[in-house]
Length: 53
Length: 459
Image 1 (cartoon, rainbow over the protein chains, first blue to last red):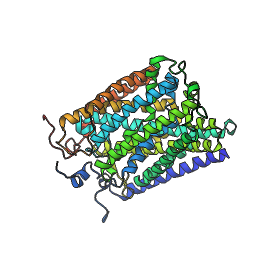
Image 2: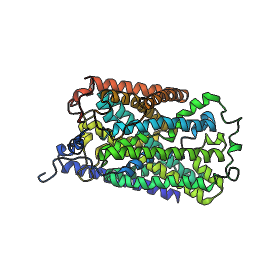
Image 3: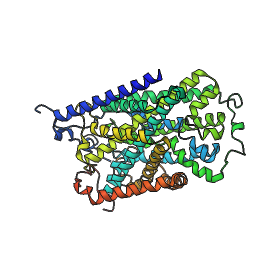
Image 4: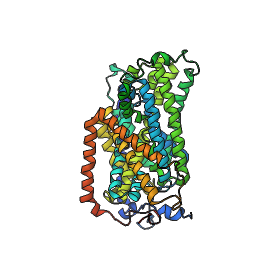
């Protein structure tokens, strides 16, 4: 049984990694690089954290 | 591409329980394994002294972190703090400390769970841990890839279950009645309490860190928390209280049931304590408690390491390619995938002790930075100059305590792993030179300082 579990672990792990690689390729070829890397630090503070002391 | 969103950001969707789940989830595995090696260094009493003194170190870390992060609410946590308060070179180093500490902790957890499976299967089964290691890292990367909310919801459930297993074990051994099940008086005697004297106590600090290593990881969620000024201090401080209770209970149960020589040797002290009770249900419970704690910790580590790596890309400290956000899941998917093979490679080639030591060293370097960072923060932006979600008391006492305890811990690490300590410091020196003389030319120098703060005092 343990051999079967070990083999199943390899197969499921590999399948998940392959799915992520496929999704990565699909995402990168569907969207522009400018859009994917458009996140900026601090923009939330600029909008929602305005306050006075 | 017409009609697609022009701008992406991480989702601001988490609450205080997710902060708690992230912090405690990363750390709790340290109660199931790791802390007990401090008994090997200095005996059972030294492990308790380390539990409380290192607990003081981490209470200082949690207080300091809560104040600074409630103000610098950005992914990257201590990296973003360092960038705004100390400077870019410090920030680059801190981000590397974070990535190393969390990736190696993730590796340690995967090895732990893999080894536990192999130990449970027994030597006759003839299996290796690698399949379980691959499965665990792949499943957790998949979760992190698909979204932070589901990742930390799951972390909350499995962390709570693992903590509950410790509490159930504690009450099952009748702690109110010493001598019935627990035998502390026989296990820890004046003759064997400190077998190596006070030098052993010092040496035990190295593994005493495992009681709490990673609680500072709560800050990595800063950009994804709905109300960072409230949720981060609340989640971090309740997490620290949870861990102080868990650590003390763990020591009390394990030191009362296992001889210190064995306690300092085993990889599964709570599981072994459960076995000693002779109860099959407690053994079952603590087996799964150990597995769940390892999984929760690795899960949080993938979350934190990927945010630190993502932040480096966003500021061009590394190629901007790493700063991509998934348009559907809103996660730093390229950073998650980039760190996956690195974790797998270390899990295949390193052993548990090496991985733990590299994680601890990077953690202590980070805490040293935090003590200096908060003193500069209070000096440059005194109370009243900017809004803080939390103000830690008795400043600068916690920072000074933290600095002193870090120096003592370096001494402890040097006693056990001096060559690794020197190698790691040399590594950070080399990459600092690379950053200063080569990489910094690509950084957008004005854009990296993003907090809407007034000019620092004295500038």
